[in-house]
Each structure stands twice: as C-alpha cells, then as structure tokens.
Image 1 (spheres, one colour):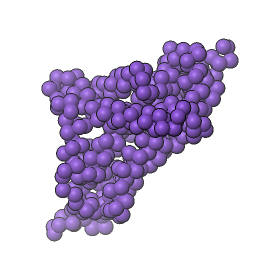
Image 2 (image 1 turned 60 degrees about the vertical axis):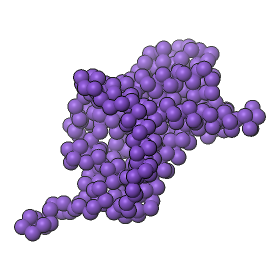
Image 3 (image 1 turned 90 degrees about the vertical axis):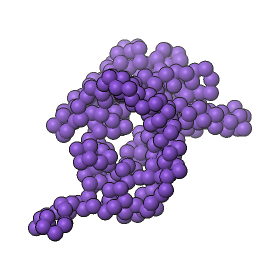
Image 4 (image 1 turned 60 degrees about the horizontal axis):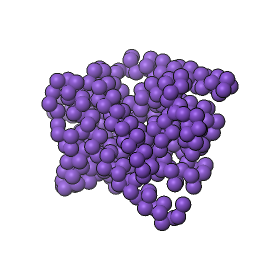
Amino acid sequence: MDLGYSIIYVIVTFIIGGFVALWLPGIEKKAEARVQQRIGPQLSSPGVYTTLKFFFKHALKPTAVMPRLYNALPIITLIVVAALFLILIPPVMLSWGPFASIVAVVGLLKVEEVLYLFMSSFSQSLMSKSMPFPDQAKGAKHRDAKQSFLETISANRSLRLISFGSLPFYLALFIPVIMAGSIDLSSIVRYQLANGPILFTLPGIIGTIVFFVGFLIILNANPFAFMEGHSDVIQGPIMEYMSKSRAVYTIAHASLIFVGSCLYSTLFLGIPPAMSVSFIVPIVCSIIITMAIAVTSAFAPLFTNREFYPTVIATSMIAVIGIITACLTTIIL
C-alpha cells in the first residue's frame, strides 16, 4: 500500500474514531438514566460539550509534587490510547509486524493504568487547595494523628486494580491468541476470516464475558469505581484537573471506551477499525458495550474489597477455563 494513501487512511480513521468516541459518554449516561427512569443529559453533553467547556475554562496551577508533569499526564494517556488504536488499523497492523501484537496491546494498556496511579500519587490537594486531614483547625487537632491526602486513598485503590484487578481482562485477550496460534493481530484477523469469528465458539463466549468484566475494571466503572472514592465525596485525582487538562482527560477516557471496543471487534470478530463499510462493526460494538456498561452501572452497587476480591478471583478462574477450552478446541480441530 502506498505510503501517502496509508497516512490518509490512518488520519481519516482517527477522525472517525474520535468523533464516535466523544458521543459514547453521552450514550452511557443517557442509557443509565433511562434504566433508572430518569431523563438524563443530552447525548452531546457528557462528551462533546464537556470537552469544549473545559477547553475555555481558566487554568489554575494545581498543588502537586510535579505540577507540569501532573497536568501532562492526561496528554500522555491520550497518546497511549491513540497508539493502541493505531496498531489496530489494518495498514499499520500489516506493516508493523511484531509491534502490532497482543504483547504491545497488553503493554500499552498497562501503561495507561499506571498513568492513573501517577495522577493519584502526584496530587496533594482537592480542587487546587491543599487539604490534609484530620482537620488541623484550633480545637479540632488530633494528637499523633497520621496525615494524608484524599488522592492517596485513590492511589492505594489504583495500585490494587493494577496489581491484580485487571488480570481477568488480560487473560481474556489470550483466548484469541490460542485459537489463532499467533500473537500477531494480523494473524488473528486472518484466522477469523478463514474460520469465522471466535465469538461464535465456546472459548469466544467465555472470553467475551471475561473481557466485559475486565473492561469495567480497566475503565474504573461501576461496580468497580471505588478507586474514585465516591464515599469520600471526591472523584479521585481527576477532580484536581481543570481547564484544558480536564478536557484532554475527558477525550482520553472516551477514546479508551471506543478503542477497547475496537480491540474486542478485532480479537473476537476479526473486524478491525478499517476505512470501509466494515468500520460500522467496531462502531456498533462500541455502542453495545457502552450501553452494557450503563446498564451494569445502573443496577450494580459500588463494590467494596469484600465483593471486589472474590469477583476478580472468580472471573480469573472463568478466564482460565476459557483458555483451557481454547487449547482443547485447537487440538480437536
């Protein structure tokens, strides 16, 4: 494929993907509201309008360990998510060889998770005002009390999710690898073109279930949203972000939903985000997954450690069963 055409191909695919991604938060909030018998926001409000609004807000210098790096973290997150989307595009997938593989997918997703941990670790304030607790006002001081910041709590929660919470998701990614007998994304797509979508097999069905549960953890969505610390009346480290940094974070989070859906379409349906009619399939997948996240969020309670750990362990065991089933399927076939 001509280099100039490949560049245009990638740019157009990015434009389409970015446009769709910004509407997904609105679809999620609208669907969640309908399940809970509320009207909900406009479809364009949580993604499109929110991004525009924050771009024009006045920027403040946050109270952070390294303020410049702290504000740059959403940009780095967006770049990582964009790199993940890039290796899913067919011209790049075919030409980059080993770089467009499951190993690269896992690595980029892990970097994205670690960046959220950095956000929590660097922040030392709430709404740009330093607020250590317990209260140090006169008459309210607690002798020998340990001081910490609210974002530190989010950092500890984030570390748990990174350590083992997302394990089921990564196990699910290797079911298509076993079925196709290769870690290359292009080989997994070619296998499904010849043998049909992996989704329509028993390992594929198991993998889909585990993928969805793991994706909820990756997105920090209900019922696994305890990293944001709603019980502390905060949103975790993202509360600190404002102006352009918050706008970029909104874009990055919306893009992660879309790119994760494209990853599912590529691995379990054999249809990557291509500049053709087939692009409809990843888009439809993103809408279905977004609405499934909304329904789960509407019904599920917020998990504590007591519910979180057994859920991760049980889902990981199901993923292992899926991997064993995939191995047996390849041996039989």
